[in-house]
Structures are given as structure tokens and as C-alpha cells.
Amino acid sequence: MRSEIRTILGNKVADKASDVWGYNNEGEVRTMWQDSRQPGFYFHGGNLATAGYYSKVLALQIKALEEGIYRYGEF
Image 1: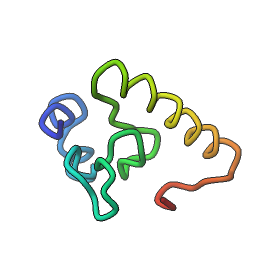
Image 2: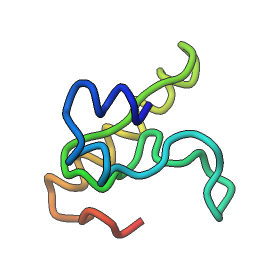
Image 3: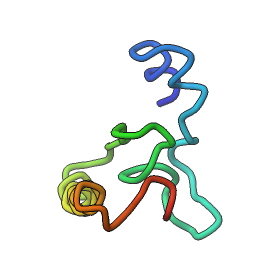
Image 4: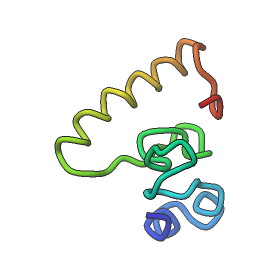
């Protein structure tokens, strides 16, 4: 996905973005539906079932940001 981001948003954004897909140290999918190190920018992908489920999770994260409950980089 980084190559697509580079094409659409340029090198500056692509170089700062976290790695996508694979697993992080906690066993979660990297950067999907969570902080990408770019405020207001999220990677969203997968099949219909996962995209539908994680849309709700991501919406809750965005709402928490708007309400001041969560800040970028806390999780």
C-alpha cells in the first residue's frame, strides 16, 4: 500500500506512514484501521466482512479523537 500512497500523496506522506499488513508485536494487523502516523489518515482494506466490522472500530477511534478521549499515538 505504501507505493499507492506514494503515488497519490507523495514521498513525504509515504515515508512517514507506518508499515501496512503483516502483524505487529501484539499480534494485531499493522496499521489497518488505526493510527498511520499521519493525523486524519487511515488505511482501510480487506474483504466485505472485515471492512464492515472494522469500519465501526475506526469510527469509534475517530469519535474518541474528536471528544478528546484519545490522542494520536496513544495506542
